[in-house]
Length: 382
Image (cartoon, rainbow, N blue to C red; front, side, top):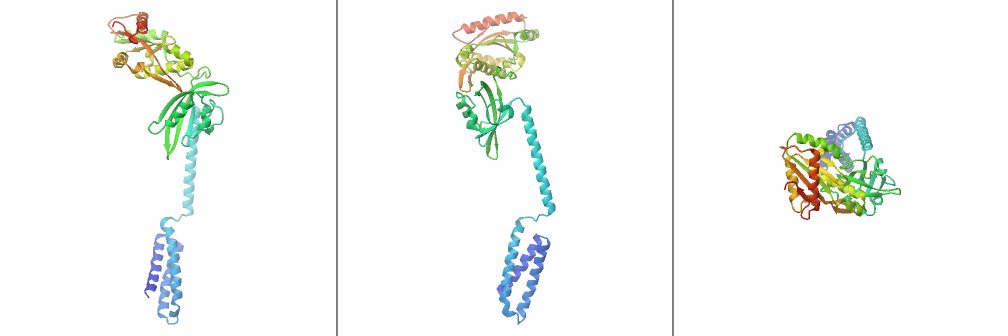
């Protein structure tokens, strides 16, 4: 008798719960069937003719209880979707798809507008994809493996190139490297700058690449030394500064070992190393482009009219083992040190000196620095 009560109670309870959780026609029907089965129990319990067949009723009740329980489980963890719900989901999916396509088209259009080529390193840096402009510099398919892509890098620079890519991580997120590209037609220098990206634990790099060889790519005029004013442009600027009667520091310097570097590695390497050294001076001391001038191939002028900048420069100038004399410049697999000599003339602003006369004094001071066996600089009047 206890089993019968349990079965009847279970059927009624499950039917009611099912109807509450999912309010639709099938579950209402199940609730009505459960109530009828509960009422039928009274007939089997108290009608003498039906009592011997109570076991049939119990089997039916057990089967129906299992059916209700099984239909109840998915309805507790999922939501019944109507045709309208599916329509809304499909509309949201299409809108998202259209938005992604717009972003993709904008991205590709932006890439085509910039002057540099773009390189994508995907799949943990194993695969490489090149934009159209990047692929103009290399031979082969725009989509390739890193190993295949590295074959386009000159054999002398390939090891340093691959190490630069492998080192990129969250900790060292950016890199810059210069290397030679060798194709069937020519060999030329390029500069590559990249940034690390990590989305969903999938490591990738996006990099821009530009050629450095002006003889091969005439439109590539970007060197820091190419942006400098020449001597004729210096004199009007210098006169204006001296007319302001402010302290002025005239630095005439020569990158004395560039001819040796040209002879050892080639003129292109010498130009790249000069460019990096000028970039160092501009970044640290003469941030104003109108304060740097190229006088001859390896001689330059830097005018410092800011006392803080000159103080920093003077400390580097007189310090033994100073960074300014030991800048190791690496161009792919080539490493060397630029050896500068400096001639400095300090003006207090109280006396006017003709620009050409100042240039002559600075030239003699620079010659003293070059001839000196003790130090690489000379300051006029000291």
